[in-house]
Length: 181
Image (cartoon, rainbow, N blue to C red; front, side):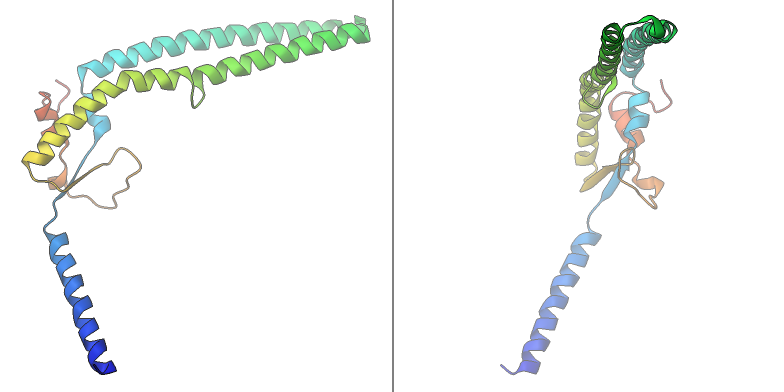
């Protein structure tokens, strides 16, 4: 086979492959949802928000109390520092540092990336998210969608036509009317 003929056959093959992929891509149906909007319209979500707020408020009150205690100890130390011997000064500074570490650890344990707040939030939201996913799956199967994206998260759409928004369909599938009722 001559080099020119080989290149022609290869180009024809590549063209056919690309054309075939283009035809396949044109037959795909893609949609999206706004899961945050769906979740906010679920009655269960209001209860979860309230539970998380109560937890957060309680922990913040404890943090404020710990901070006040630490501030008072620091003011007391500063007022009496000249009266302390070197040994007592070092002991009090160590106590203050220990209180700071305890406070920082408490904040991290409650509100850090692996903290109790996010653990509880995940625990509370998981059943709701599963319900949304199940409804979405039923809608996508029924309407023959190949892909469905969630606009709420990191997926950035520069443009998305409203006709591909499945949010209302998922809300209806879940027995919600889309207006928060």
